[in-house]
Length: 245
Image (cartoon, rainbow, N blue to C red; front, side, top):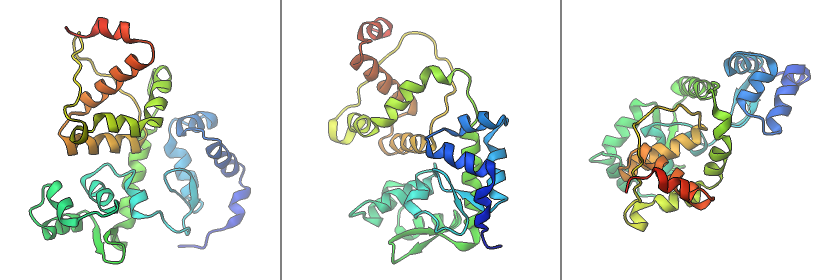
């Protein structure tokens, strides 16, 4: 790999993009700012100049890579879930193996090896192997490009999505069936219909992890979250009107 050239920071597009990211602008907003059809164009512009995406912004490729746990926040897979569970304090690898459907730790190790991970005794967790590191980064990049595609009508729901994200800890405390008992259920009237929304990959990962760990469908989780939101913020009467008795 060629040494990183710091003079690239003088590139007007590089400077503008990094400034917009620092201001908290989304990928979609930056894509629209430059008049591109998708985030892929911006991403490739940076990669050709020695940058990589670290989940929040672009950094030089030579910069130390994020920790395994940080990378796993954006990896919506069983391997990512195992790494996140092992990164918790007082994690028990045998319990993690059983929780994820493996009869033994060795069986889980074989699965992780097949996904490109090896055990690191010092970190007491799985780490990316050098030979598949690039492949894993490409996979994450492709996933982020899909998640960043514009969704028609998303602006109407942005306030709700921002609220759910900022209250995720309280939401999961509410939905924690192990500590609180039975998950609340709301039966809504009307036929089922599809609605496509773009969520941050970290939120999708939390949603997937909770669904798998507590055997609750993702639809049920979102219905409970929305019902509780409407009830708490002045929409209880309207909510009751669409609930089945």
